[in-house]
Image 1 (cartoon, rainbow, N blue to C red):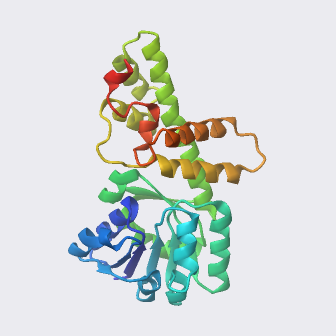
Image 2 (cartoon, helix red, strand yellow):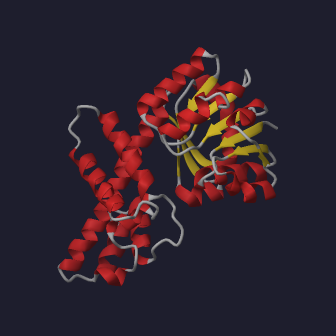
Image 3 (cartoon, rainbow, N blue to C red):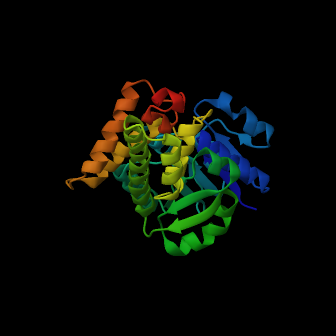
Length: 289
């Protein structure tokens, strides 16, 4: 069985490592804050001191760090992944990063002769912990066919979009649209409240039409604010700014509007809160009525 390394063990990385352990893989883990590794070590993971050490003895290496800055560090520094990666290993960027950094990393891996994929993740905390994430892949198609069986322990479905960078491009488009849905439901419920409608009836109907995963998630959060952060405001805001950069000179009024929505949420001190809290429904439904 192949050996796995997970570099970055936040919500998504920790869930990935846990599910690989459950399926009998040997798993090495590294995190910038090593004190967070305790539960994974107790579950059987091997803690390492550097990303280099994680890569040296692993067949598949996942970078699940937070942003461009953290990702660049774990790949390119002297104790980084590229300093330890073995020929024949598969190197995967699974955080959500900007397109310039995604393309730069793919080119650097190609120059050194490594097989590299961008496979960002979606499914939030529940998907990571349950091994039911949706994976969004870009990279060499033939190599991907060889990799796919080893993605099953962490996912319920994998979408392949094409060459390197395609998975990350789709992830930014996806997060843009999902953020618009979250903010849109909040706005719809505020209008319903202000007009004196029965908000429970409105929300239940919207959960059916238009419905969809994100509408239902936002409606559920309105009724029962999450006790744990599934996807923090600061991370969706980061992704939206990457999406704005990716869109270039195209007119994107909806993207610009929803980015301001989450910028404002950051200014209100909601950075660590669940992204659904940006709708001002984080305390209780009754507070809005």
